[in-house]
Length: 630
Ligand code: ADP
Image (cartoon, rainbow, N blue to C red; front, side, top):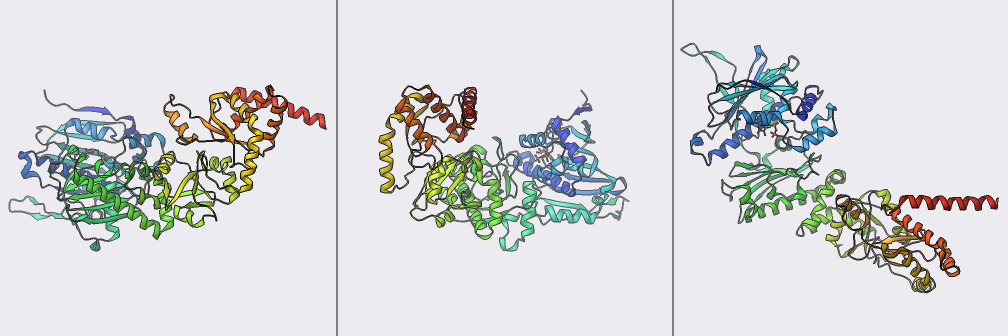
């Protein structure tokens, strides 16, 4: 059957993306060239890799990227002799969005064209400057070439085409107002600026002069890019600007990186690495199918993208390249999983990145804090996941604290520690506001001890894994054993109170039944009548809520109810208990008190209606009393 032309609708997200691109007032339209060149370069890399195992392609492995304009027709061409695309691949790659991150991003930010700079639009950026794009491609081994074409409205067309060799030609019908991109000098400077590092040759057509003996126009090509991989060159020869441009090409980021580290590892294994920390988090950073951004090369040949075994998950925002001299060229993802070379590389990437961040923190507090605000919660995962790196991560940690505005490091906390303070205190809560108002802080505040706010879901695991810093234990203000030193007087007062209140404590335990594991007197409260504390080995309420949100079956841990022995309410309850041990008010008020401590720790109460009824009842009584007295 003869191949037929067909027209298809774009996936809805692609339409949305194209709409954004076409209507974008984004001033950096020139990035389309970098994106298309980067796609061509990837296609050449893929062919080179395929040629390693496919003899028929061996002579073709050295490809190039060619760029030329036909000014009279307002056409710009970008051509490569790389891996090409079959008809199905054209439809799949240029008609749907592969990364769920982009899809999700689009769902959240529909319609705001100014946000376009935040995601790598890749191929679709062609529509920043063209109103019609034609992509003609032939995959190696295929007979039939195909042309994908679209005006970015709703659909694209696939039609049979002619192409002699494998590879892809992109034909842009450049919009009238974007004709600068047809100029030789403009193209030349863009290639130099954005794509100098591309490892394949990028050639521009020389202006046509005269004709040969047969009268045909002679076309000559001129290599424009330097073409040597930046990571192979000595760091001393590379300008910051070149590092920045290489990063942007590699990551499709629109902003310069925050910092980078360029290193060589010699010894039993030999490899070079260049790793970057971005300014802004990648869109998919908190998604399960996030990509890790380190590309693996072996002896300068591109091997694979998104090499997840090379980067620990808690450094998933790092972008860069690793070029190993030790791995075999035919290394696969599976082989990487279990190799000592991989382990060494991962260790080095981890070390170099953390060292670089440490330097950033030392050199520029503001920059580091900006990094921390966006990436801190990911870096903290490392405390829990990577015992070997804990010690390196700890000095990089930053928290807000009762000390006031701004971030503090653990070192700074220790410097400020009050006299007689031996531990580092923290509270865990949903937000700083919730944590700072927590009754658990009362005694610590009174003693002048600073408390760190831990408001990330990951904090509970992280801080438990860390355990101590610089010889000081990390102690939760909400845990049962707070270990605050008591003066002899305080101790005596507490023991007397325990004797006096013994009956009440037992009665409250009886009323609350198995809702709490213990009822006891507290030394951590000054203003509040009661609070719940977490027994040894138990989880904080915040983490428990998060886990319960994911798994309804998760049991609620039993906490210890602590009462403030000097609080008037507690004293009144005690009197009531002495006078009328069977009082129903005692039952009601105890339950109310319990509901109230649940609310202060942010946990839901079992029966909100009952709580509301009781509150109303109490208010009624209180207002009656007030009126009677007036
Ligand atoms: P990305 O490059 O981030 O995957 P793009 O939108 O730029 O996203 O491209 C989508 C896909 O189309 C690429 O992943 C690649 O498979 C394919 N593609 C684009 N350009 C080319 C090309 N010149 N040669 C071969 N395949 C290409």
